[in-house]
Image (cartoon, rainbow, N blue to C red; front, side, top):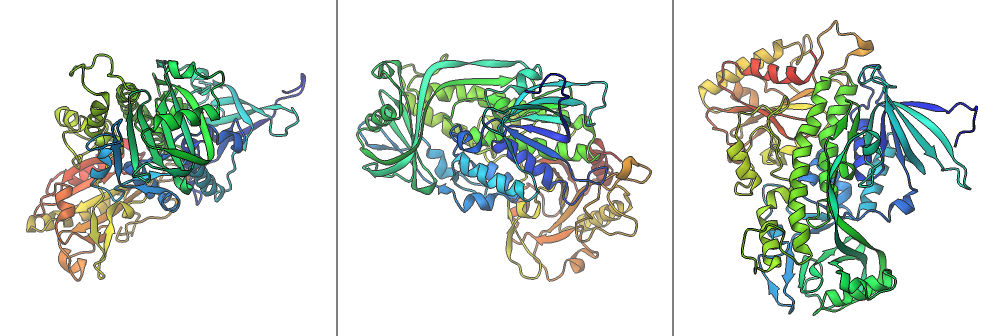
Length: 631
C-alpha cells in the first residue's frame, strides 16, 4: 500500500479492462485492432490497460470453459482469430448418448450437434480456456499490449463533472503486488471507460453500484480434465452423455491435446462419504459415474467441484462509463456449454461500439444498445440454464408442465434440441433500436426464440447469413462473411437485381451514394469498397468538414458474367461477386428480379434491410447511418 504522505501514482488510459480472461482479452484486442494505424480523434491509437488479479499459472486453474459454438466461431473468424483456434481445437461433429445400461440411445444428450446447418462451422470447436487465452494474449502482444498480472481492482469512482468519454471521468484504484515478496503498491488509473470482465465474483459490479438477481443452488458439480490411459466408452471422441441414476447426465467431452473432460453431479449422500473432497475422490467417483463403462487415467490436468447457480446483473453499464461483460454480467452453470460463448457475444457487441465512440465517430447514446441487446439474451440464457442445470442433475425442473414421471434425460435432450438455434448462437437476435431498424415482428421473433424457425431469416436484428458467392473472372467460391471482416466498419450489401427496373435503381442509388459527403470523398468513387484508415475520424476535434463514415460496399450480381461493368452499365459499388445458382439471394430472401440492400453492422448483425426499387433508398440508408454516426 502507499505510505502516508506519499502521493499515489497515477496513469491515464482510454479504457481500463479488469480481468484477463477470454472476454477481457478479446475486448482489448478489438480496441487495438480498430485503432491501428492511429485513427482516434486525437491522432493516436486507443490506449488500453488490462489488469489481472492472478498470475497466469494461477488464473489457468479457474478456467472451466472449453467449447465455442458456431456463431462464436463466425464472430472470431471476422476478427481474424478463428484459424488460431481451429489449428488447435477438436472439431466435434458427432454425439453419443447411453442409458444406464450402456445402450446407445438416439435423439438425446447432445444430438443437436449432428444437425448444425447454415454455417461453415458445423461442429463444436473444443479448446480449453487457457489455450484460448494464450491465443488472445499473443494477438494482443502484436499491438504492444501486455497484461498487468498480480494487479487487483480495489474500487472506482465516477466524476460526473467530467464529460462522458473523457479520460479522468473514471478513476480506479489498483493494488499491484507483482514485485513479490509481500511488496504492494497502490496506484490510480484515470480512464474514460472501465470494463469489468472479472468473473462471477466480480468486484467491479458492486463498485459500480449495480445490483444483480439470482442465487446459488445446493447442487455440486465435478469437472475433471485429464488424459485417459484406457476406456471402454464406445465413442470416446464424440460429445457424450451417460445417463446415470445417481450422478445425473454425465458429461463426456473430447478435449484438445488428447485429453477428455468428464463431468457429473455429486449429491450430498456421495459427498458425505469423503472426509476430504480432493482429486483422488473426484477420480474414484468418476469411475463409478461412467459405469457400465470403465476409465483409467494416465494423468489429471485439472479437477474441481463447484456450486451451481445463476445470476444476472440488473444493468450492464453504469453512469455511461462503466460496463460489465462476461461472467461479471451473467453467470450460470456449464450445463449447456455456453461459458465462453455468451462472453464472446458481449465482447463483440461492445467492441465496435466503444471503439467508434472513442474515435469520435459513434454517437455516444448508441452505447446504451449494448445493454439493450445483450441483457435480454443473458436473461434468456439464465432462464434456460435454470432448467438445464436441474435436468443435468437428474431431476425435473420446478414447475415442469409435462408428465411428472418423465425421464429427465429425455426432457433434457428435447430441450437442447429445441434450443439448438440459441445454443449454437445462430438465431440470437435483438429487438428494434437505433442500430436495428425493423418493424415489430414479435410473433416471428417468438417463433425463432422457441426454435420453430431455424435458420433465422435474414432480417434486421439477426446475423447476416454466411453464403457462398463466386469471385470475378476465376469464378471461385468464397464465403460472404469472409468478405465482411470486423474492422469496426459497416457494410452496404447490395443484391443487384436482374430486372431492368432494378438495374436503373442501382444506377440511381450509386449516383446518390457518390453525392453523399459522409460516404464519399470529393473526387472519389467507391469502386474498391474501401477508404483510408482515417475515414470517419475527426482530427483535433474539428468538425468543419463532413465526416467520412466507416462504411464499405459489396455488390452481388445474380449471375456469373465476364465483366460486371458490362452487366451494370457502370462500375459496381465496392467489390463485386456473383450468385450464379441463386442460393445467396434465396438465403437472404431476395427476389432476383428486384434486388435488395442490407446494412450490415461491424459485428455481423443485419442493421436494416431496404428494397432496391424504393424511391427513398438512399435517404433511408443515410438516415440509418446518420442515426448512429456523427455527420
